[in-house]
Image (tube, rainbow, N blue to C red; front, side):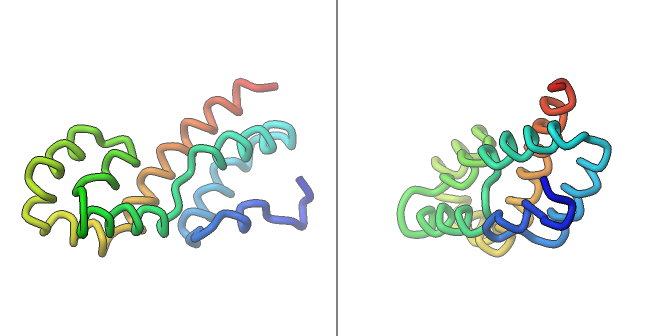
Length: 120
């Protein structure tokens, strides 16, 4: 990775919060580990726009898909059987899709960091 290039800018819908977290979290990795981290994280990351689309599908079709996508299976089942808590939970997720994506991406960044740290 070139020092003057920021590969995280290529992620769709990246927020300043997420970029700051990624830069701070990978500061102690060497170049090979950073490349490995980027490869792993880019496969696991979810963009806020994708979560918004899944949430809109929940409004007009099957509720809870966005929760299944971020790995919250029990919440997804609860949304599915309660029609997104009578659409209230689905609308809240629609408004907070960036927070939902950032929380999920933070977990995936930590997991990817641990894997990259073990890689030499």
